[in-house]
Length: 95
Image (cartoon, rainbow, N blue to C red; front, side):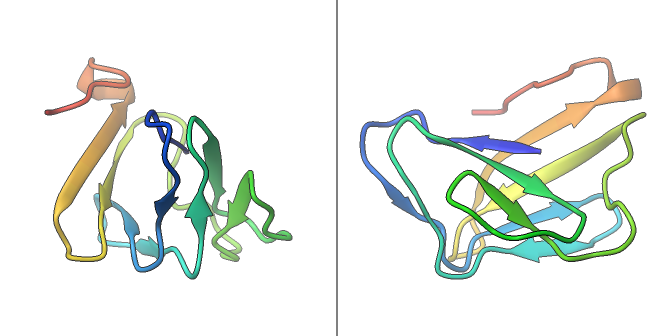
């Protein structure tokens, strides 16, 4: 799962959450995404860097066949979502 900051300004993602259809949620902790940068959120276990963060879960939250991930900010407001697989609108963004 990738999150891209399209603005020129950095965004403080502290307290932002990424959740799947089953309600499993990853919450960013003291993470700042630079302007025009992308961070990849991995479900496995690894060392967090500026470009990659890990949920430290042994099992994969998002399967590759289909799913939806929802990004919310620290005020629980909907920011964006991405769907893939059977939904038929890969990478669809609601505005």
